[in-house]
Image (cartoon, rainbow, N blue to C red):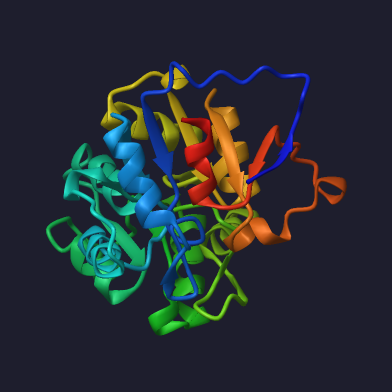
Length: 269
């Protein structure tokens, strides 16, 4: 169901060839698929649309995310998953001799075991802040801050201020910790996930389409939709996940299209 739209705009999706869709809060929420999402994805694929499932989830490996989606019943190929971990790997691969210090989950740190890491009294070239909920220790952040203030470049896996846990409760997310260190050290961090414009452009390269040939679907007005707009891409907000809290009258982000859920997307095609 279409909930909101700027009627002064004439939306024409006949040129749309692909969809960049968020995952958590958009395809599933509170441990279950969004009603109708699996069937809608299948129908849209049959219409010839290409998909890239791009997420800010930085606590899990891309393989784990793919496994979760398949367990929910979504038909998705491995090369259709794009996460900040993949984007960060691409960046570090371009800097093979530079050492890093990681504040991430143990699962994600294993993803970078082939990259050089700082040891002893060394100062790393990069400090990487991600989700670290499996070892929520402020001393890890303080160590990262010390490295940054001594010259290391601050990298954030993504820019979300908060996320919703399995019970739908808000929890401080990576972006808030990154900005805390950036503020304390007086530096500008490099962000790899949403809402970084570069992340959206990397996603376009993966799906091999232009900005006017794709839609971004997501539940986060700031990271998903405003991030898409900054990259020159049309965004559609779903009223699931974080989207349930969006109130146009109280938000500086004005959206042209809001739909009930991912399943409502079929109405446009």
